[in-house]
Image (cartoon, rainbow, N blue to C red; front, side):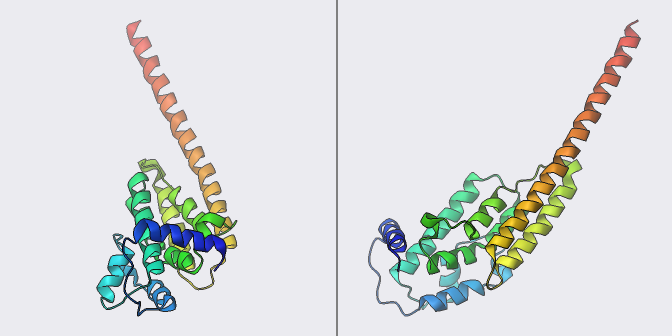
Length: 208
């Protein structure tokens, strides 16, 4: 295990594991396989990965290292959604790739420190920042975003994801949508300004 990964694991254990556990009976490969096969319906509405594992396999005993990673992912997950003002549908899409995030960190604990140029973390950052205005005139933007996020979830939950291609594709979509939404907002503002001028003109004529 690289030094960075060892440092991360040691820090997580110090933060989340208060007492050393008994000998484990579940390998990391088994844990990763379970996380990647969690059915979609079990991820609806969020929930903690640790709780899902405990519910499905109460007899599993994980290593302290793996437990620390899972608890950390759950903890960060809760903090992100508490601090971020995301629409419910967008939150759900992000919930659905949290298991893969856990897998990535289990397999390479140094990711949060090393920050590779293209990774699931970068994709998650883009997804979290995909907030859409609630204006009724921007409904199409929300629909297009949800459609795109569905595609992202499908790609992330597939094996051998190319995060470079995925991140570039998502960024290109967001850039394009931002330009389109900005134009819609400008047209709305121009329309409202025109209506206001018209109202003022009518009031001015009535006063004469």
